[in-house]
Image (cartoon, rainbow, N blue to C red; front, side):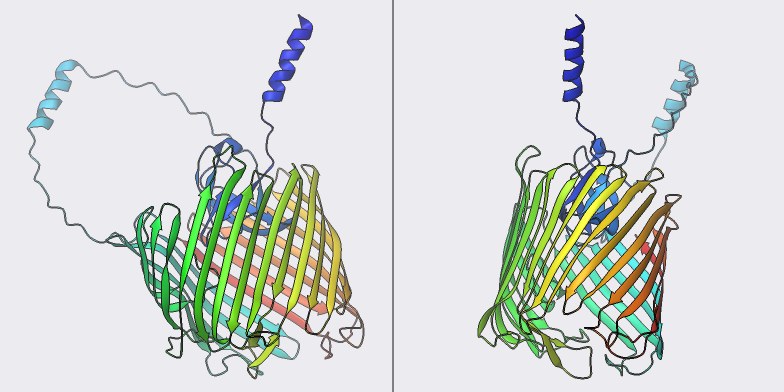
Length: 542
């Protein structure tokens, strides 16, 4: 009897699902993240999640809605980023209140007679545009920044950023807006970028769109940031396509705004076609998500001239252990080819994340860039860059819930000059101290190659009463003699406080400074400098 009882208890324990300690972002759009965890993992609407990538903080998002196995989170991020799972606070037990006994039957009948005999005048309904209806999201940020360095500055900038998504206009049309107004109230020489324009307005999107949920025609008019067209520049014109299920294909075209000011211009233009599709597997299938996008376009810009471009993007999620993406762009003609060839491989990007077992993951990426891009923030239109390769690989292991061990490495090579940089270093982190409200990490990097040196840092992140988050970071940098006449040591400090004043309003205060420790020279050969940066912002999400 006893062996059978022990065997039954062991089988029941084995059948009980293990508690997950970490979840990931399956898919990311510009304003929303889709998570692979839900209510059964402890998520609830309104919960703020701290995102991580390669063991480092990567921002945060707020849970909008949560199902049993999945959830959506408002914010910006990237597929593959992870976040810690913690059980939600226990709700207080509801007090049981006994209802009063019902009134006598004669009293109820008398009240019923009064209600049924009452007269109500009818009111005509006049429908109007549903601006601000369900799904509309507005983000407004007002900020001030001050920057100063030894012998230069100070510089003061006031800035207002506005983003409006899916504002209902009626008839199935919505308005999308993304813009920034900036005012340099104080600048000191030398001023290289737009020296005659202390007030600057940048509009990245101002379009009226109609987007069907499943099947039908989709159209956007105005300043359009084309959807499902990877790498396409913004345009003043239109995008039109037809959506069938989870696939969409169509055309786009218009004039291209000025490269520097984004003001309307008739000097350059673009037109092309795009295709996008997405397949989501069942919860138990090996293929969880497959997403692909492609575009072919003729583009004429002041920086790259007239050229034909083709670009494709694919994202793949297999089980809960692997996700990856690949992006490739080819071009023909124009001014940007590093080798001067009429056609070239402009860019190739590959990213992947592999988690062979729980609490052990590997993240890596490869970049190839083949375009020579003009330097607009300078005294002349000088082209810089060219063919270059960049690769990075990191590993992360959590032997216990309160300890995270990471290793970071990378390699970058400029194929034009032949210069190469390599870096490698460890990182130790305690992500869940004091009940998960505090995280501490310390790291070190050894750098070799043409820019040799080393650096280290200590970072603290803490949640204060669930409405505020404090991040502080102390950094040390050592530059070898290859960058400056003498070896230099510098100390940097950063602090940021973000407080949620209400459900919609938040405030952010940030400060950073950097100074030489040994009185040496700056990395570019001048005297050692001290630099200070201050930033304050008030944000609202509606």
